[in-house]
Length: 205
Ligand SMILES: [Zn+2]
Image (cartoon, rainbow, N blue to C red; front, side, top):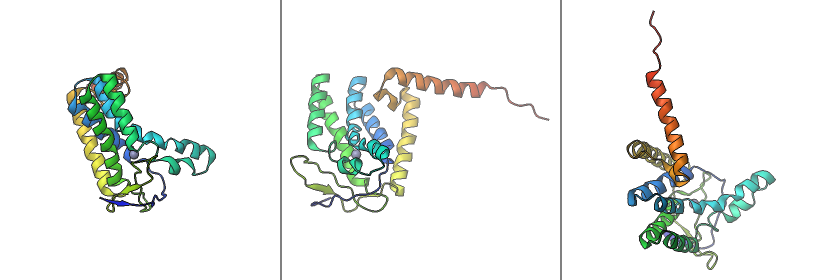
């Protein structure tokens, strides 16, 4: 890892990493606590950073690539958001252990971006960790491209791990949003699978 100064470059957007962030965050959360509220704080801490990418909606509507590249990896990807999440999780859950894991979840996201956030056009995408106090940009020279095979392999491995975890635990990443929604969706899946198993087989000859 090395530090570079003021080389924040622009590249085409890619949303490939969000599913990876989702699975990593959920796996971390479910492995460290059995409490669903704590899992939400820890899991969502690994996702909220990318809310600073919502400018993409305005860019699509206006047809101007303006807000996404200007604010993504700035507003949500910095130390102060991490501190805010740490404090909120600690107060809400009344647990500094949960706060600590929330801090970890947030920084796992930043680490993932640093490791594998290079744009498909080869341009790097640094994290401005000290923003807005410092504009210093952090980037790893070996940053992997979003569309490179290691990212795809990591996604497939995380997905396979999630399938196993869902089957064993009876809950999915949807629990980070709502336990009820999670139960409904998993119930619907089970119904479809059960109906397929019991469906009459076509006669031969
Ligand atoms: Zn991110």
